[in-house]
Image (tube, rainbow, N blue to C red; front, side, top):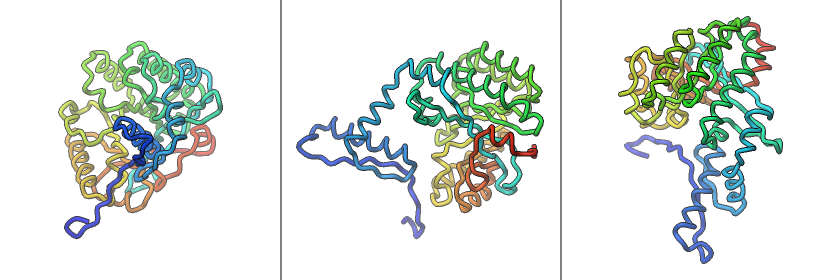
Length: 316
């Protein structure tokens, strides 16, 4: 409570008991970090008390072998999950579908995309994942998406964007398909604008010349990023979930989102925020002027294959 107003703080916390078995500072911090990691896996606003089995789970995830990573990318089942992106003022009108991935380990366990990507250190792995995504999409989904007029936003890694060979392969897939370039949106982490590699800017230019829409993601509290952005560099800014989750109850987050919205308008870019899972959050984002949102208040996520085979058309 501050100045008569309740402010909700979204955070993840890990707690451990200090006793004779862990009275070294390094051990205490390690246990608290592992408990905090477990909290983050279970969502924001979670407090977890350290238990020994958490360490085993954390160790297993951190030690995924290179062979297993290659198997998951090249051989194992991969599912594309679609989330509707729509104006908070007209939530029933879908602008395009934001795609995330679910991957399967060789033991049949499901792993979400962000967790899997965080363990990929080699550019070759990121290139291979990008190729798998694009090849599967154009093989199984592009024609249906085109016939229904559905825009689709696929992830593209910074390493993939820096590879002119991979960008050319993507553009060849697009050229040989019936999908108009304007329906293909590419989601790229905003840190790419700081990359001095000339291939990155050349790759962005090629994609935009082909008509593709560029979505710069993970736009959060680092306001310095706007010193590297210029008009027409991208079409959309996708806000980091960290600054959105408590925007309806946290004045600082509301101010941060308002500042980002102002920068986006100055640059001629549209903003996307989510996941919005409460009507109050949607109302707050709408009031700030956010252009598009995604989340359960818009539509529940569903497999892209199911969506394409059940939807009649899209408003684009």
